[in-house]
Image 1: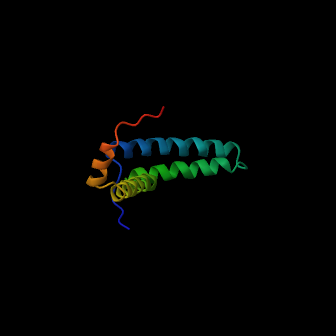
Image 2 (image 1 turned 90 degrees about the horizontal axis):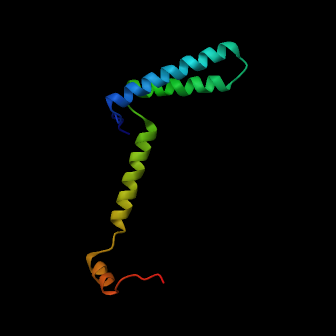
Image 3 (image 1 turned 180 degrees about the vertical axis):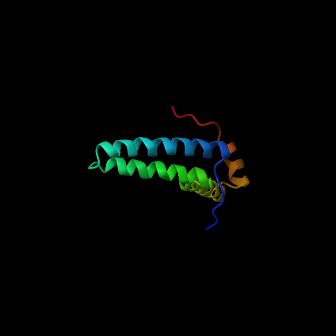
Amino acid sequence: MKIAPNIGILNALIRITFGLTIVAWSTSKMIKRPWRDSYLFIAFCGAMKVAEGIVRYCPLTALCERWSDMVKDHQHATAPSDETEELADLDGAYNPT
């Protein structure tokens, strides 16, 4: 599995900024209410965004790109040949009424 940067510089800077903001907010809330586990989860999510910005790799973006490539390959593999397109043109216009 080859991991190459799949987000741009501006996107990375935005992720770092928002990630640090989320981490700071959640840790400040965690200090007031340490028994709440949701703030810990939110802090981990913010830290994940900071890490994505630093390494410039987002696994969700890679998954979406890979899925779209698979859909394009499937559409290309199941595309009708030229002969079937000519036969479909002879049928006439489609009238749903």
